Figure 1 (cartoon, rainbow over the protein chains, first blue to last red):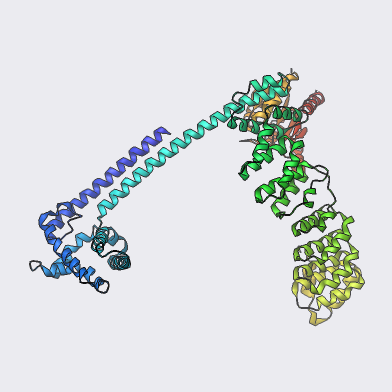
Figure 2 (tube, rainbow over the protein chains, first blue to last red):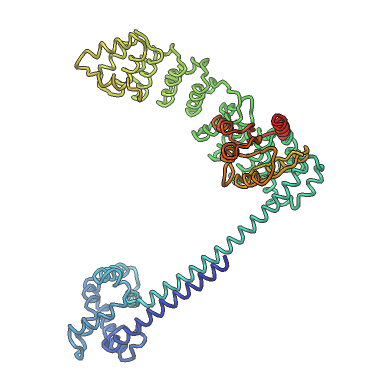
Length: 503
Length: 122
């Protein structure tokens, strides 16, 4: 690393030196030409232009300042700025005319950065705008100085610009290298420290787990365990054990967790002002001290912070084995989809017994109702039929959609008349779902209902109605084929579509 | 004394298993990845292999496949993995694993299964 740094710095310096040399050679050559042929070249920029030149340049500057004093600069500024040099030439009878003046200006322009970059016209426009724009806000005494400053900035030489760029580049490269080196060293040191203490704690813990020595000896072998940083390392070791080992080790882990008063640390973290530390505390308690974690987790179920609330809700599912979702009874804040998914994942991972979700269908929160409907459908809890049918009156379209889906998948036939009755008032998606339910528990009585849809104009509804009728039973299939004979209905493509096994 | 090779990239679990097996009277060799596992198997006589599935360089499935299909070895193989999906378990058995334990596992159960496997292969 150090070698790379040195090589890079030397390379940068060498590059910078080379570029500087090239540019200086170029500029001195040009300066020589300029100072000889251009008596009114810019004295501030070209150091070797001499006294004579500076005297001659002061003239147009004074004339310009005088013009400024006479006011109406804003209206005449375009002309004054652009004709500055021309007027200089004209005012001096010893000058050699317009043609020569243009020749004189050429080498000068070569060293103007902005002119090179954006062109003469644009440069002039910008100069005018900058001066005019600032004028109303500046005191009169400062205006000439301001104009001179703008002028200087615009006539800034390329050589200085590039020198500055090279210098900044080298400085930047060195700074980055130093930062990288320092951060890398720090990172390595932290890693080495963590590794060292992690190994030490692992040895002490395994020794205790294999009953090679008692808890006090194990603790005495854990150097610097009182430090906050080291306690964090030790907790990560405990997590690793807990994640991979089961059986007797759980009790031993709990024993050492209490001996080191890590439970107190975790509880303290849950009372912290930082939500992140609170989450860490909740996680430690849930994984390493499950029996004592439940009341603390419960107190964060309705927390205002979304992340903390999600963590508490997910932890609750792990902690309450008998009723993992009972926290939903007291939930006043939204139960997000992501938290629902995480809770469901944990629920499946720990192979917990599925509780009845019927009571949660009466919740005031629509996301709890939706989650419960999904769970009822997943676990096939048909005993909740009555509660599901009630949700056909729910305010939200999505809840009604999930209720229709649950009715369809659980085969709740008693809901059929109600579904047909609600069909016209339902949303488009819910209408499709209602038609789909008839595929599973429709009969001859529903032919009229489906025929009405088939005679309608909506393609998706027609497809689903044809599918429901075709696959309902043999009489449904015959009825659809009879309808197909009516040419104006043009059912051929619909039947071909539903009959295609790819659909 | 029976020699057991433990291929596991989690150092803590590797050392814990090794410690437990040594305590139960086995000789244990440990490796951190699949590549080292195959090298050790080539150069050492081993009576049983305990391997993780997700390891650096060469994964557990490839290790089992090499042992069974290329070397045609009848070495007892026990898989120890956090992946407990039916698909993963079936794949391991199809490739030639003799036993499969899902993490978190009990150390006591591990020893019993190891002894049983060695007894069956005798």
